[in-house]
Image (tube, one colour):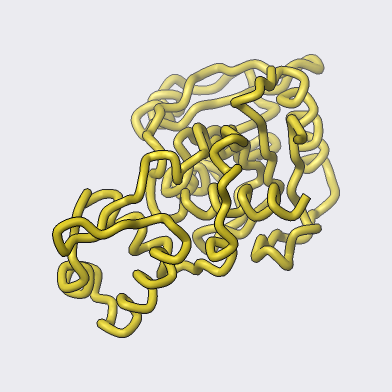
Length: 241
């Protein structure tokens, strides 16, 4: 069992798409930050680290996504989970949020067709992710989400304004969202307040060292159906290795 896994271009067959890396000063900053975080991370038998580099999620490509997870929660992995798709994750997340719901409720509230709903429920049931109680569907157990933390980091050289929007988008799937910049001095208080207002944290790099200038707010996982992608991607990778 690996303590840390880096995921870039080698898992396309598992449905993990990534953007072609553009070499340059910005990516050098990304690489150095990854090494810094790897050195800082202290793995345990119940907490490992997966590092996604420019994964395709929500029609965008966050620079880095650090995901902490419990590997033991994947030990009873069901092969049927490897074929689940976006519609399945959306319905699974909605079942999670509503606690209990029947198929009619899914159709009316999500706007999914009856056929797609029933096919998705069948796949989720085969994957042992949901169960039926009193004509309602519910999450089988809380351990189906093995991911503990999803931290997205967006890097930018010299300018912070250009990266704010992406950091905000990353909050759609990440429990924590950060901006990484080589700027450490002269940041206007109004800009720091703006980041803080939206719960975005800030890392700086100066004099060959990284520093966290502001903490990100924390959201519980899964933040949305998009968070489930990282959970399932890690499971597929672990079963492959």
